[in-house]
Length: 230
Length: 261
Image 1: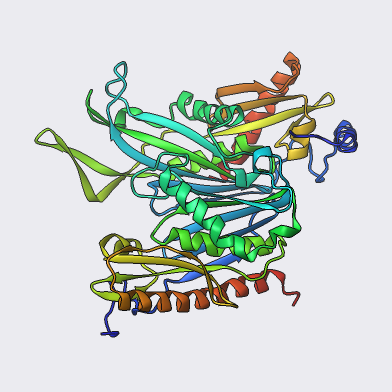
Image 2: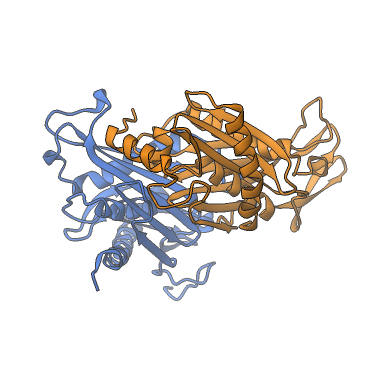
């Protein structure tokens, strides 16, 4: 059954081709560009800087603010600019996914801003955004316990497969995006929609974690490429 | 809040007074320009433009819609600009700022007034169905002179735009799945932006030059040397001679810019 070939020719445990680049913007403190399959994602990080938004300020800790935004031209039917309910939710869970790796207690009264721009979307943008954001945080020189990484698994044609494409996401039966800290294996984001048995879910989470570990190596490579002195 | 250190103000002003600039350019010299088209495969037209460190991406999406009642046989252009908070530490998320609306409108005016998009060829059925082109500008890195970068990006993207062929079958619009046509364009245009520093006009300002400038002038010129849009910005006035100098310089500079397209 693991011999099944998917609609785009991948094996059940195969990722789409990924390209990650660190430090692509001039003004931002840190930035990253990521392509996975047809997704194109840019992330910029500002901070830690003094919180100029009073209501967000915390006297004994830093605050992380995250904005996930899709370009109007990133999808087949033009998306109206500005936040909608979906992107607000993704912004929130992305911040939650990255926060455990940050040492915010060292930055009282400050904030870290993360801006994720989906320039082109082809399924799995939230995980790709988290992966790219973690690279941008490193590029910004923000101290972290680990480089968070995201990846999804799902169910298509009754098979558990890794890293769903847009078609698979639309036609598939379930989607389980996760993010984790690869050193400890702790999960910092977990969503699931669709229909899975307990056994299938366990399989999906194992597969997604395995995918995360592979993507994690690519994150490190991108950073080494940018910062190694050779 | 954008505070300019006094030392920056003085050093830039002194340099310009002697005909020099912080990055070693001439007063009428552009930074390096690069243009890539078809960067978004899901958009019908797209481009990424860099002028120095400034970077913008534009995508063009068409939609079928009803024409305006006063122009029942013409397509519709709509330009929108998002100054993404990623591009600059002072840009905030939220509805478009005044600056962003001005930027979009100035860019739009050049395209519209030069009539380079043949809007009559975007009519599918008079009074009922026309193509509406949504031009969405995304500012991703702001190192000064967004105006010229945006206009170049829109021009390049329009030139790369392909629309699906639409036909009327039984009073309904049917879009062809594989047949496309190039967006009909009959001219080219570029915008030249000047700022006034001290008593000199400087082309393609950097961010710091923009901050210390007292006035701004955008001049839109077509390939054949016709002026099709202008906008004065900034807190202080310009003299007639300064305006005429800018127009004259823009007409020669635009030829250089158009060669990048």
